[in-house]
Length: 528
Figure 1 (cartoon, one colour):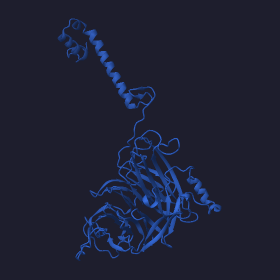
Figure 2 (cartoon, one colour):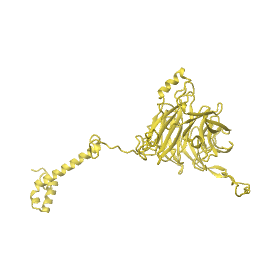
Figure 3 (cartoon, one colour):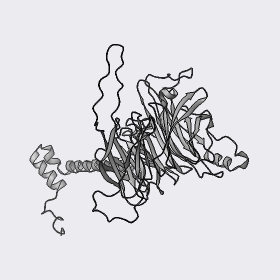
């Protein structure tokens, strides 16, 4: 399949990718400071012979120009400088399959951090928001180092950014990870179906993880994990056909959402002797109150179906407790969110083939879907309709996809940037060593550079295109024709023009110069 038309693009990368995440903060006045970080991970194999097992950070930072003392804040008021650089973090023989970027906030004192699911571990890295003083190793150099037997004990690149790690469990296999900014908890979805919850604590030496709960319920590998917008619950989805809700407080399972992959618009199918396995490869909260959940499910073949779940407060059978004592010095009773019961409100066919990756945009308006045939689709959750599909972006199934984190322009997307002017809606990757960026824009919004050379009509003679040359020659021909008509009129109709007889002059110019009379020799027949 041909690559997507610009400004969408597909970039070749040196290793297969299995996980990606996108974090962004717009550079808004008056500080004019922001960042856009794209992290993707993968590698060539989970063994001693693995090549290019790493995490790559593509960082774009916008900040005011530095002052004379080296600190930010110099230059003109409102001015800023955009810097782009890559950071490689090696994982040696272990392959990272899941990553999650987040704002440290109060938990870590600000900054941007990365959680990585590597083997049976979860690792926490800090994201450098300034270009490294020395360039990181190129993929070719990393390949040479990893192939040398004498360097197997050499620390991998990017080790200086590691803040801490935790062993999830023997043969658990970390698949997906997420961070809860409300109470600094971390959830991990594992290959064996377990969902493990940790409390993260900042220490003088880095970060420490304290186990909270090891939650069992899924019987197949967990695909996605995410926190409730208010941090009270964990939403997970797995290859056992279910999405489940867990309490962050005690790790108790509160509800199991069983996904259906029968076509609601098709006639009822005959019951099968062997039921098809249902894979729920995507789940996400759809609003800031956590009342809407989206899940994408499919079989190993056949169509994929998007289900919108809407939560309603659980009915209370018992009478509410009597009000407690009130008065000065007594605190009001704590506010408790009502428990929500989620039920399917709408189900639709979103893809003719299984969907292998899903991500919801930061503003909750677009759902990015990646299919097993390599296509990328954007779905409007308000109208529940496909906005656009890019077929054949990847040669292999899409392993991960990240929707746009914020609707505002991010650093590097400004019209003034050399490669800017494009607001990408989603980034996808696959094991085909390709990284795709798709957008709904028809063209890049970039400012045209002014030419300083000699010009004709604002353009240099060398830069004039073929169309400009044809237009120029056409005008020259029109002017030459008008000049020839004037010369002929003055020569032939000199008498009427000198006598100032307009009627006679008009007849002469029209019927003699411009248009010959039909009785004139040579008009109707040969003049002899």
